[in-house]
Amino acid sequence: MKKKTYTVTHHRKKCISCGACELEAPQSWTLDTEDGLSMIEGALEKGQFFVGRILEDDLEDNKRAEQNCPVHIIKIMENGETSSFSSL
Image (cartoon, rainbow, N blue to C red; front, side):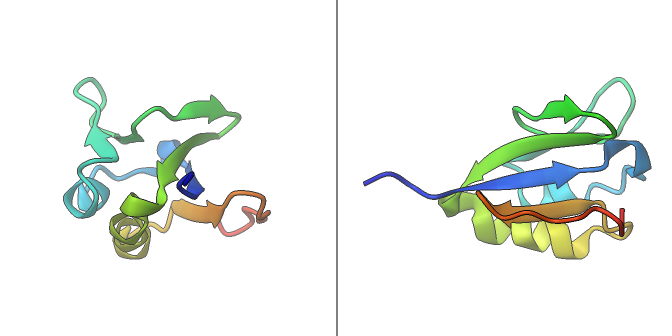
């Protein structure tokens, strides 16, 4: 059975390097050793955002990362779902 995937969008330039995402979902997030900003594993840059995918198994950890981000720059969407980024 194929596992469900989710899209994670991250406004990396607004990251404050607090490490909350890495703490909550270390399997998905790291802090870059060069600039100290967080990065989601395998994300691609799309304009001002970085977009990556996570498996359903990692959803709860990443939801905590989204909720605990003090600058609210992480958004998780079910694939096929659309969202405006006006709050970012």
